Image (cartoon, rainbow, N blue to C red; front, side, top):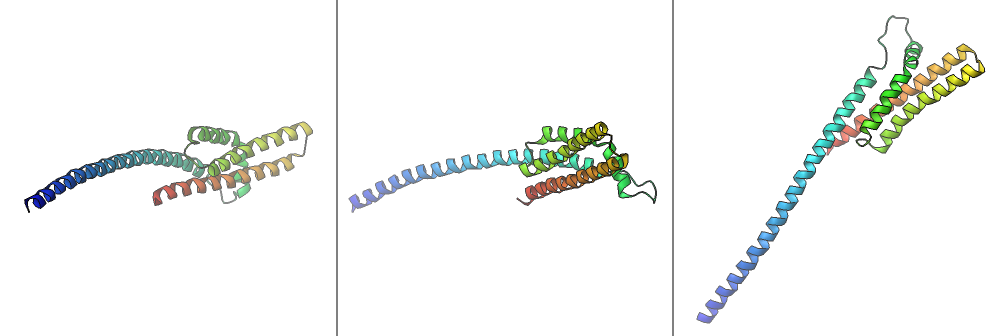
Amino acid sequence: MIIESFSFAVLGGVITLFGNSILEKIRAKNRLTSEQYKIQLKKSEFFFEKQFDASLEFGKFFYELLPKKQSVFDEWEDAMSWLADDLQNHQKFLDDFISKYNILFSDETLDILRNCSYKVTRMNDDKDEHDINGQDEMSWQDKKWSYADEFYKELENANKSIRNEIKEQVKI
């Protein structure tokens, strides 16, 4: 009886000793996992903050692109003509934006932004060709409006894509 009690006591002590050791290992692992999650959360918060700031900057650019309507006679072509006249500055903004924030956005969004910039390059190439070949000025105006319209629509797609990326971040 004493031997049995002693055996149970020793067995209980061994179990307690190993049990505490196992519990300590589990606690240490949980602490490590918890710290890793905290670090990952901090990184995600930092990334989202930068992405959000970039989206605000792009949104401001996009919504200020078109001129305010000056008269009831202004039409879409008037806005496109005004936009086309300033495409070089818009391309500079886009190129700077892409180089500054390229790490923050998906390849799909970056492709849309690069395509916007490329449309300006294509327009400039056509303008040079027009100047060399001496084409009709009205045909150039139509092309210019068309380029500006394509540029604007592509920027609209870029804005939607950026906004969707932000919304996806918020969902998680």
